[in-house]
Length: 142
Image: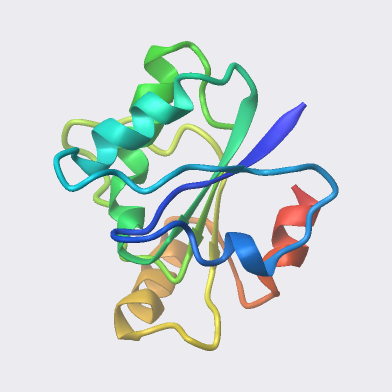
């Protein structure tokens, strides 16, 4: 069974999580305390589940998708898919040169800023699916 995992934003839980209704209960990762780094906290929280995960990032935390993907692979539980909502584009290559290791869908909402719109152009060049469909529809289709 695949579980939808909403990863936190920089300073709050993923605001998209409250706006969608899914058939199965999603995993909503808590916000790290000020003393914890975002990637460390999220990787530790996700390590508690053996479920296959669809990792949902919103906004600027999308830059951490390669690191979180790497942490899942190191546990031998790779991501089933990545959904980046109004993202800042993750860096490809570097320490995580084999990312993405699963399909990536980029969702651009009406609230998208210029960085997200630029990310959508780069995403198309990489062959990733880019859509303006409602997030709920995108997640329901996975």
